[in-house]
Length: 217
Ligand SMILES: NC(=O)c1ccc[n+]([C@@H]2O[C@H](COP(=O)([O-])OP(=O)(O)OC[C@H]3O[C@@H](n4cnc5c(N)ncnc54)[C@H](O)[C@@H]3O)[C@@H](O)[C@H]2O)c1
Image (cartoon, rainbow, N blue to C red):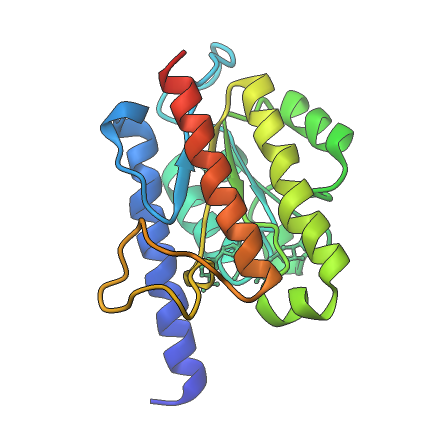
C-alpha cells in the first residue's frame, strides 16, 4: 500500500473514532463519562427555538479545514443535516466545501467574532480543532502558544457563557519520553518536549478541573 493510502486510512479511522466519541454527547451525562486523554467537556444544551429538532444540534467546528475537520464535518452533516454543521477556519475553503454547507471565517483568537457566530448561528456544540501542531508549532512558538492556549481559553469561556457542549481533542504528543509505554495509562507522568504537547496537557488539566467544578455545582 502506498504511503498516501496508509495516511488516508489512518485519518479515516481517526475520524470514525471521533464520530463514535461524539455520539456520546447525546447519550451521556458528565458523571457517566470517564476521563480520557481526549478531554470532553460538557454543559447543558440550550433550547434554541421551535424550528430545530432536539436531535439535531447546531455545531460549530473550528479549524475545520484541517486533516480531521473536513472528514468529521462530512459525517456530522450526513447525520444532523448540512445546515446544522457550521465549518470555520482562517483559510479559504475549496469550492467543494462551500457547495456542501455553511463555511465561515473564524479566527480562534478573535473572541468577539466567535461570540457573534455562536449567537447568530444558535450554536449548541463546539468542536475545537484549531491548533498549530507539532512541527508548525515549534517553528513559531509565540503563535502556537496563542492559538493553542489562548484559543482554548476563548472556546472554554464561550462554552461556559452560552452553555455549549464542547469537544477538545488531545494527542499522543501530550506524553513525553518519561511516560510509561505499552500501555500508556491516561493518568501518568506527562512531560512533553514540544510546545504542542505542553498546550495539550494544559487543555487536559483545564478540562478536568472544569468538569469537576461543573459536577460540584
Ligand atoms: N491529525 C491527527 O492525527 C490528530 C491526532 C490527535 C489530535 N489531533 C488534534 O485534532 C485537532 C485537529 O487536528 P488536525 O490534524 O485536523 O490539524 P490541522 O493542522 O490539519 O488543522 C488545524 C486547523 O487549524 C486552523 N487554524 C490555525 N490557526 C487558526 C486560528 N488562529 N483560528 C482558527 N483556525 C486556525 C488551520 O488553518 C488548520 O486548518 C488538533 O487539536 C489536534 O491537536 C489531531
